[in-house]
Length: 398
Image: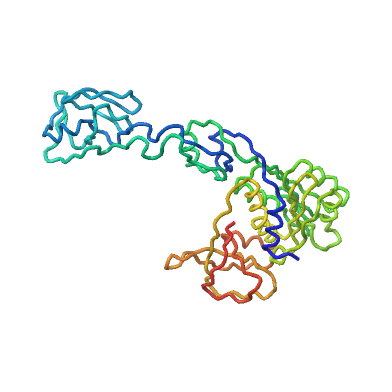
């Protein structure tokens, strides 16, 4: 039975990198960038005025001039004017600095009468004030974004500023999620006293979508060996990633490992020394598909999805591995089984600003309702059994 680290390494080492595709820049939020984005022009592309007011030659102000005839008005987007000696140009925020001007006096410091401007008495100006110099943010040809960046709304602004209407990103993986079990009944359908609501599949899809993986379809299959082999085979042929929930333990109706073997899926491992999620199964399909068979208990399903499926998709997409995050236990915890424990926690901020993890009790790995008040799990390492309050542990947010 593999350790958690061994299981992670085995999965990440087996799954290939996704291909690339072009997408519209304005629809690229959440996608993983697979090209460099290079500045089209200097930024700002001209000496940009930062205040409404007047543009003057500082040398004239420095020589004692305080009254300037109004030569023209220039707004943002107007062509650049040329300032004549002794005059001023009324200027707007965002406009290009007029030729011959090198000082902006804010509108609050001037008065206008008879088409001339007077600067208030005692005002002290400086050369180049309220001017955002051309190229001071970055120069044309500078690399602004590099491959592997998950695109944010701020990045969309950067990409647009470079004149790109499309950008190269990692292809969206085709993901098929399958829930198995005769006892499961979807929401909206009549249910008998001996049945339970189907919740794992929708929860897995919700988590995938939360991380930007939106090409997901769900199917619910009964515990019927022949039908399972037929339908799982169809989904396998159409998917890059296949995720199953249930049917991977040792019961008589746990057919999933047998079905996957019959479909040509090579098992990489079955079972991990962890709780919850010990029965997890992973293999690779005949055409390079990643196949995750997650335990059917809801807490186990979500923990395994977060710990193994999401990092695998991120790696395949070319996204950088996130920096480790830690939280300190808010109370003593004891866990005696020789297993790595993923302990659900609620996060609070301590008085000193430290991130604290408050354990949230779940009755069993089927107690998914308790997860709604949690923020993630902390990882209790295999080699220890006692964890005093204040112990810093790896944190995995949902």
